[in-house]
Length: 288
Figure (cartoon, rainbow, N blue to C red):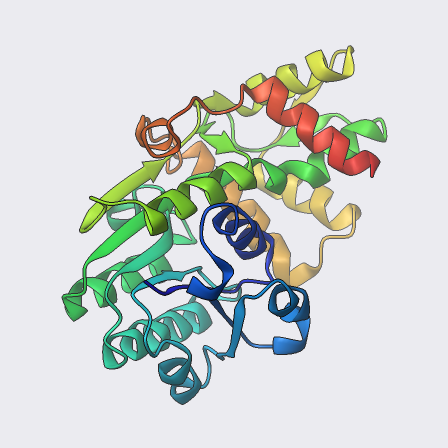
């Protein structure tokens, strides 16, 4: 069996590969990357490094050749770019006769109104169209996404949000990687959708958990979207990204990430790290 991971030098992909290497022989593992030179460390560990560019479909068909189980990790970029790139990857997988596709999607993708949902909706539809057995890994939200806010608190700022009482199922990126690895190496995951969500918390509850880790109160500043946008500009968020970060807050406020599920624990075979433990891991990473 040959397993291939796309985006293997990225933040999530690198963790998935590291987890796979704990149980999968290196000669059964391949990666598809746009810049093979960045994956030299994986090559040295015995992983097959293949060149694949989501904007060059012919490279993907070659990269996916002979692959039994494929993990397509969603790309970065605007929605239009991601839809094009993901569609290229899915169609190449079909032409290469890949046996199984796992895809990192978003919470409640098929029904979601989150501003980031359209590429995931399009990709899930494209995968279904191929008829290839699949697993949709609907990742809720990486706790690491909150590092800028955590760093702000460490610098003396309050926890700033316009998400109101909207809830999020935060989990560590490593936990999402472990779940993906479990699907790629396990059985019985064909044509399954997994809602991968941690315990639902509001922004205020997350800030309180952070305060317990820091042994001090973390004040929460609830603002409207316009004020949030101004604050983001004041801390250096580029203008093109301001609507995105505001849209994320809006999506949380509207409940697009408030998905309750035990799928995470079922895939991992263990409970997720409690939020204070997970925040402690984030703090350790910031100290390095």
